[in-house]
Image (tube, rainbow, N blue to C red):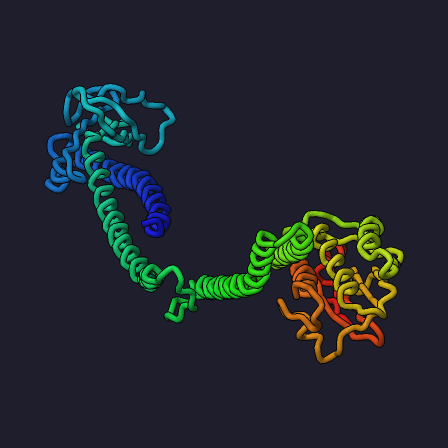
Length: 459
C-alpha cells in the first residue's frame, strides 16, 4: 500500500495540474471558437443586409443565427443616423460606445434581458435604400452556451484522465504485489523458523533484496558462532570449576571433622588456599569473557602509555616482590591509543603473573617495553625464565591448557590474546633462549584516524 501510494500520489497531483491546465485551455479554446463564429455571423449579416436593403437575410445566414456553436445568436443593424435597419430592437446593456477611429471588430461582454452575453460589433461603409455611410452590425449570444461547451470538454478530459489513473493504479498495484511476492514468501519462510535455527537462508530472492539476505546470513553466522563459543565456554567453565569447588567442599568437611584444634587449623589453611584458587579461576573466567566482548568501535578512552605504564609498573613490582626484577622501557613518541585501560592493564598483569608462575627458578628479570611500529603501539613483556618450547606455543594459547603442573587457571595467555584482538590489534609469542617474549600491538589514535595507513605486521 505504501509503495502504491508513493507512486500514485505524485501522479494524482500531476493529474490535478493537468486538469487545471485543461480547464484553462478549454476556456481559451471555447473563447476563440465562439468569437470567430460570432465574427463570421456578423460579417454574413452585414453582407445580407447590404444586399437586400435590410429586408431579408439569406437562408444560410438565418441557419447560422439560429444555431451558432450550439446556441441562438441575436443581431441588429443600425444606420448612420442611428435608426435600426434590421434585427432585434432591444440591444444588450453595456455595449461600449463606438469610436470614430474604430477599425475592425470589437468584442464585448454585456447583459441581454438579464442574461450575460458575449458579442461583437462590426462597422462597415455601405449604401442601403439611398442612405450611405457607416452602418453598425452587432451580434451577441448567451455565455451559457460557452460554459456548457467548456464543461463538456472538461468532463471528457477528466473522464480520460481518471480512466488513465485508475488503469495505472491497477497496473501499479498488480506490479507491486507481484514484485513483492518473493519478499513476502521470504518473510513467511523466516517466520516458520524456530528460535534456535540459525542456518543461512538458501532461497532464491530478487536481486534488490539479495544484499539484505546476505547481511542477514552473515548475522546468523555471527550469532551462531557466538552462541557456539558461549556454549563451549560455559561447558569448559563448568568443567574447570567442578574440581575446585569439590575440593573446597571436601576441605570444608575435613575442617568440620578435624579431631583437634591444631588439625583443624592446618586443614583450614588448605581450605583457604583452595578457596583463593577457586576465586582466582572465577575472576579469570569473568575477565576472559569481558575481554572477548570488547568492541573496537566502543573505545572512547584515550590511554597515554607514557603516563599509564609507569603507574601500572608499581603494581607489578609489588606482585614480583623479591622473585624477579621488573623493568620498564618506553621509547619516545610512543603515542596514545584508544583502549579499555582496565583490560589492557589486566593483560599486562597476566603476562607478569605467567612469568612469575611458570618462569621457574632461573627467572630473575621481567622487562616491559613500549614502542611504536607502523602506526601501532607495541607492548612487549620479556623474561629470562624457562620459557616455552616453540612446539608448545599453540597449546599454551588454548583455554584451560597448562604445560606444567604449576597451579594456574590456563586462561592467562587467552585473556591477553582476547584483549589484543578485541582492540583490533595483534598478539604473538616468541620462544627465546632463555625465556619468553609476548607482544601486543594496538592501533594508535593516529592510525584509527587514518584508515589508509599500512596494516601492522608482527615479526
